[in-house]
Length: 134
Length: 279
Image 1 (cartoon, one colour):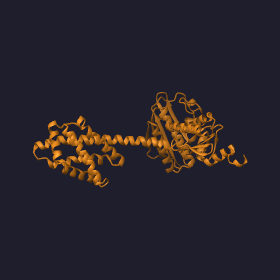
Image 2 (image 1 turned 90 degrees about the vertical axis):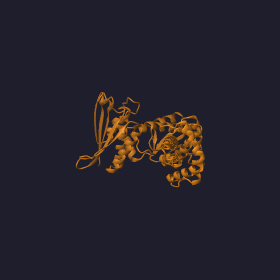
Image 3 (image 1 turned 60 degrees about the vertical axis):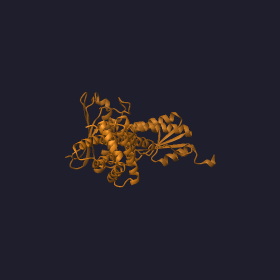
Image 4 (image 1 turned 120 degrees about the vertical axis):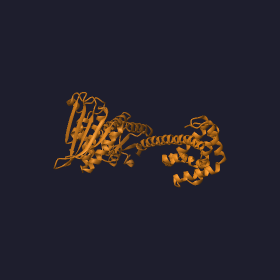
């Protein structure tokens, strides 16, 4: 069961900020704890920036979900970029191709409860993350 | 239908002959549109100026707003929109100030077909003038927004002197690359100017510390260190601390504190300036 999500385009730095603000608003609405709010907002910020920088822009869809017992938030980041050739390497701490700290993707995975990534070279990348209320 | 040279001179004569009545009616119409937000005297002066501009342009034989005799008129229109934009009037309220001239002049024309044709041609000229105010208005607004964005950037990155030899940068809001650059420049310059050996970077006001923010802060700290200053990061709230750990960001041997007060106390203890009498 899930609510109709809200979709945002990610084509500029301002859009990353917009995604962050939307995620924060929804997090507050489903009553995530302050720590979980911050973790989810940070993860969304990382993935939105990855979508922009490595995926060449894409979209983020934020929706509330319910598994019968708990409420949560699901965010889907999708881009039509070059995709990730070596996923294991990309998920290694400290590995970066863009001059960052190399912790965005791997760190974001540790910040959320569910992390799912679908990617193929030339096929773009879709990342779905979920955070449940405790 | 564009204005012909002959029509232009006819209207120039018409304007000249009926100057006082036309300015009066025109001012009334504009005043209605602005609903008393500008004084009658000021409006009267503005419309009289514009009226002169129109008269000058038409008498000079301008059949199009871009022609040389209309230079004066264009300058006046630009000034009008720029004033209105700064005073917070809408584009409609600004354009109405010009459009109203058409209403004012209509009763002065006959009701034969030739007059109607004249009126349509004159209308096109006034419309062009009003559209010109639109463009100027938008341009002025955009300049205002750009100015404000720049001011905001300046405002949001102050470097303050907390104590003798201690400067602090309270970061508020989103730390993107542009702001991080400004912060670093300011901090390093202030370190040189004040000869301070200590700098505190306070991130209490940064809502989310992601890897990009962390990287910017780390780079600033390293740069400050290269210049011989010690950097302390303060304002690490519990939720930020947990997020940083989960992300796997290492702050290494950089001193971090929960609050700005803690950071200041730490620096003062370290430098010994809290006990000046014992020295």
